[in-house]
Structures are given as structure tokens and as C-alpha cells.
Image 1: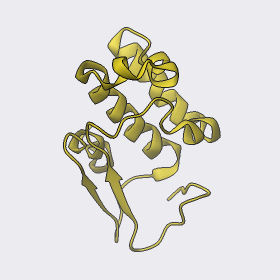
Image 2 (image 1 turned 60 degrees about the vertical axis):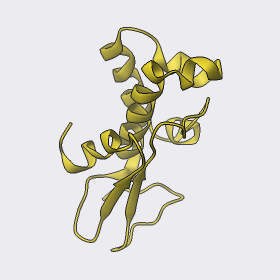
Image 3 (image 1 turned 90 degrees about the horizontal axis):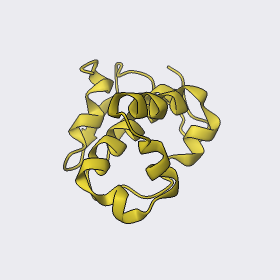
Length: 113
């Protein structure tokens, strides 16, 4: 399993996927800068949505990002970006959990998206 420099894999690895209300302008910027595959997930979200969600995510305004129409896909894209960047796929000894709305971010971890 690939790992982030700041996350060491262990048999007790737990992935937590955030729910609505945890979004913030610039979230996961360090992951996107470090892992090109993570940035590709954000670009894919832009393509699927037909608008530059990544621009709202990077530059705000906060009011636009917290609007449900943007917040939900932004959190999903951020979760996918983390997984593609180095979070890997669920394996033995790993589990995942989510907050309200974060269950969508956990679906790729289980091969559901």
C-alpha cells in the first residue's frame, strides 16, 4: 500500500472521511501539491461537474464552498484525492468511517465508486 509521508501504514490504519461542515477553502492542499494523482482527482471532478469546483475549493469564497451543491462534491473529490494520492485501497487490518455525508468519500475505499 502506498502511504503519505506523514501517515505511516500499520495494521491499525483507519481512514476517516469527513462529512458536510468540515470543508474549508484550501483543504487537502498539501496532498494535492505532493501527489499528482491526487490533483488528477480534483480535475476529474471539474470535468464531471462541468464547472471549476477546484477553483472554488482553492480560492473560495467560503460561502460558495459551504453551499451544499459545492460542499458535497468537494468533500467527495477531496476524499478521492487522498485515496489516489497515497491512501491506497482497503486491505487487511484497515477500516474506514465517515461523518455525516462522508459515507460518499468512503465508497471508493471499498471499490464502490
